[in-house]
Length: 207
Image (cartoon, rainbow, N blue to C red; front, side, top):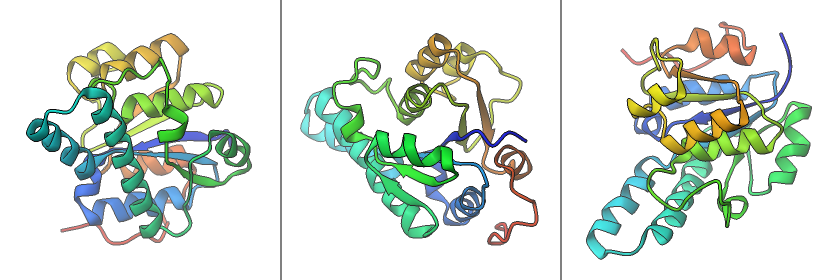
């Protein structure tokens, strides 16, 4: 199996279940491939949405605050899986991930003033993950979510079903990225992609 590095976006919805998240992070941490992990905003991004409704600040502020929510989720990932380190530097990720390291990207600094990422709620961590894959040399990007894409293979169909966001769909199409959407419970497929034995020592699945 190719050892080319890969981008894995771990959806914020997974962070609502400690059991699921622990299993996913354990698999990622054992990958022989280099992995750039992109965290979703999860409950932290939800808090931004609620605050914007309450206080009425603009989408630019909300966009930056939601990305900071990704930082918080990423720090949580690293605390739960000590084998994963964090990085706020795209150059560092580009240098270390091809050597097999697993880094959780904290993206605010690298996303500032990026015209490919409009400051609206149409831009989610999906788009940020696709953009990272593009910037790292058009790597394959895996979107790990609470549900799979099923039979949908078109990025536009996935965006219409709100499985990925429309900005991610545009970046994937324009950059010609290889991608896959899988559900968190599809552990066999995740292990296959990352080159991890199914004998990996992960916490037991919830009953």
